[in-house]
Amino acid sequence: MKKISLDLIKDLRSRSQASISDCRKALEESKGDMEAAMKFLRKRGLEIALSKKSRCAKQGRVECYVHQGNKLGVIVEVNSETDFVARNEEFCQFTKDLAMQIAASCPIYIAREDVPKGTIDKGEDKEEFYKRHCLLEQAFIKDPSINISDYLNALIGKIGENIVVRRFTRYKIGEE
Image 1 (cartoon, rainbow, N blue to C red):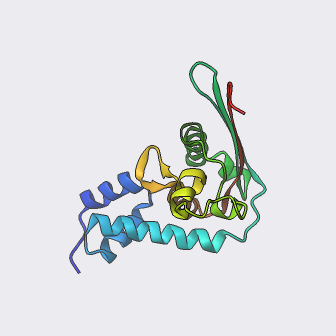
Image 2 (image 1 turned 135 degrees about the vertical axis):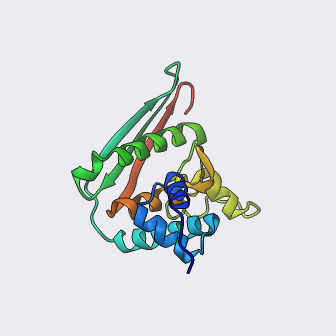
Image 3 (image 1 turned 60 degrees about the vertical axis):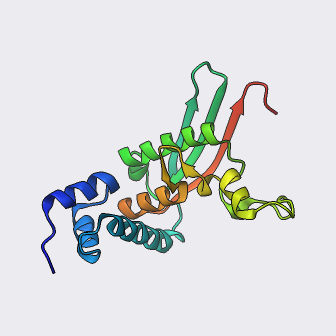
């Protein structure tokens, strides 16, 4: 196996925010292919997230976002297993990003499981409906190549704790 250069590891780390050892392993597994390494890290994050899913997340953070002009506001609750994680800089950035995502993309539900039966019209494409109205299915406004679920799973994989988007509310002046 060829040796992976430090520059390649640094580049992957800056793109993924994964640990150096995870970046090295991903690059070794992908034989130095950056895109394959990114896919490997996403898959690893998903596997870790699935293993943590059953853990109780009762700590967390409530993030508020008020848009310029004070005509739009968002409140989102995101839970973690410990208050230590809730104070983590990356967790706080995630909650801020989530609040901005909600303000910009107007989701109605957190996940596809939250959509009541009969809500989707028979002629409507279910996947498109979920991408438009379910927060976790939406493309991330800061990086449209991933969705919010990918972002969440990567964070769970990096931090090593279950993280749950519990609820959100979006207010806009003049909107019912």
